[in-house]
Image (cartoon, rainbow, N blue to C red):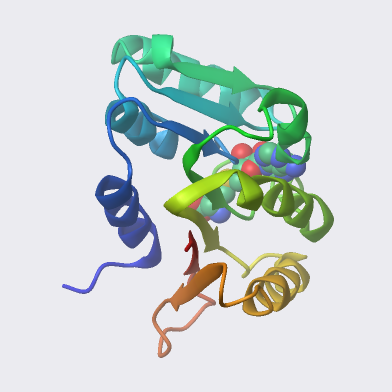
Length: 187
Ligand code: SAH
């Protein structure tokens, strides 16, 4: 079966991240990406995670404790737009991932927003090492989602081809605004 955007994001992470790497989970949410990233970077790597909701931090801390993955993870209860305050600008980043929208089974009014999403992406892109990916899984079926989707697409489609390759991946015949994926590769 063809992988959906979420599964494909995990395939891309598995293909590009190795033990010892430094990566960013820009939207911790339910913590599934954080756990995968922590496994991939291993005990000598580091995952920096961000979320504005305490619930996301708590749930994910528990998941990481159960799986003994907490030592290689630092979770920040703050917006991803502040990533530049936490990471050194010259860090060799092996990857970053965003899942846009709201946290499922939670407050649907707490959503990622174009201004802060773009600020975070613009901060992270120069940190990517050669061949690294910044992945955005774009959920946009919710109120406010369309505006963010357009802003992110506009930004990504104008990135200079000499520096970045940009992929858009998603089903084009599905109802109800299925998420799609953007992968920005540092060339
Ligand atoms: N829509 C996806 C999940 C997205 S979760 C799905 O259905 O699976 C998005 C997460 O981003 C939420 O946990 C939310 O709290 C978080 N978030 C919102 N604004 C943020 C910001 N500025 N920085 C970091 N995380 C943010």
